[in-house]
Amino acid sequence: MNSSRPERLTRFALYFVRLALAASFLSAVADRFGFWGAAGTGEVSWGSFPPFVDFTGLLLWFLPEPLVLPFAWAATILEVLLAIGLLIGFQLRYVAFASSLLLLTFALCMTFGTGPEGPLSFSVWTASAAAFLLATHPQTQPATTGN
Image 1: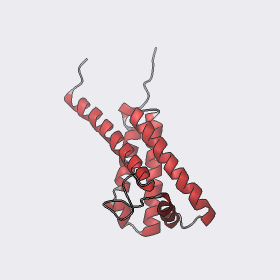
Image 2: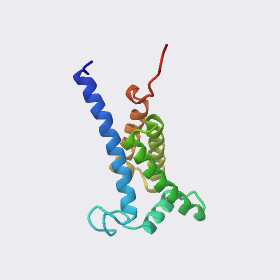
Image 3: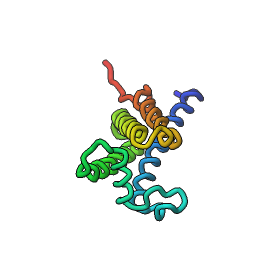
Image 4: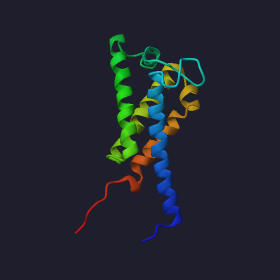
């Protein structure tokens, strides 16, 4: 059976959200390992892992300092795993929900750590909402089998 045009557009929009979220996660990770260049060149934020750890400490001001490095690594690993899950569609509903929660946590930490302008200008709230919409959309739900 042929899909209607709105169904095809919706399917395209869902793939687009998956790709955009995955690319954003992977780009942020690439930045922390210097793949986009040195800090201060172009749009590079960190350029290496130590400045990212410093930024993590700024956002997680409420944590004891020895926990900042493990949280920086945890965020990095989660971003890579979530990006892969979004790209291949593995357990998509759960991966999208986890992406939304990670981005929501980031937005809240940015808001309370550096002020509201950063997460708004960098569309962190929007990305979290998009991931949540992806997680709850009927086309991303597992297929059910009936008798």
